[in-house]
Length: 317
Image (cartoon, rainbow, N blue to C red; front, side, top):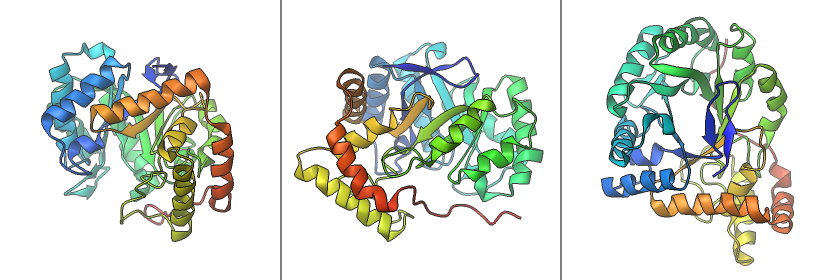
């Protein structure tokens, strides 16, 4: 598995990252032995980056991931573990200094770790961004100084949040950002932000290469917030691939790995089979490249909805 540098952190992360939200039974019950086997398989095939949050499965994802890593008996310095703070299943959003400071201790206890490699403020568009600038990030910096998190990041859907925050905090305050649903076949808007992020020395993680289920044969869950126009175009693209005996999921996964400016692509996984499919797609890309003909056909189908997104967060003052 290809390793890529993560901004200026000095961390090398696998191009495919293990998204652990499904381990929180978010998409259905995952038996513990299945979860352990998935994490073990991921480690065996060279995945070293694992991402979770107390929000996923109401803390279950963190606890299960911690158990899986212990069960795998992997040396701590061989894995890069990221979790988040500020978003909780019961409490909703709380980015106060007191809550995020308490949050890291709770997360470390669930994970069974002394420190996480990355601590993100989770979905920051759901509070006033000035709170993130003036209260949350200073608190995260103190957590970093304490050694409980090696690096700090911010996550969210609207791309405008990153520049707003990074322009208002001292240089080097934020080490990484985690963007989702903005680097895939249907939406490449993250690319426009990459030079700015590089100028700030910020590492880039992307998630949801399948656009939260839009770019799959089964289609998105009922609650998916995308406009109907985008859903129907993605459905047409998936059907086109199916008719040709191809998989839109594999194509979308490979496409998301093609930009080396993005350090790692997080994919939710809950079984060894899913791990193997994602890694096989990555290896095929590195040896024989993407199916250019199919890609052009799918891009043509999705062209009318290119970069179409959906609102997320609160109205900023």
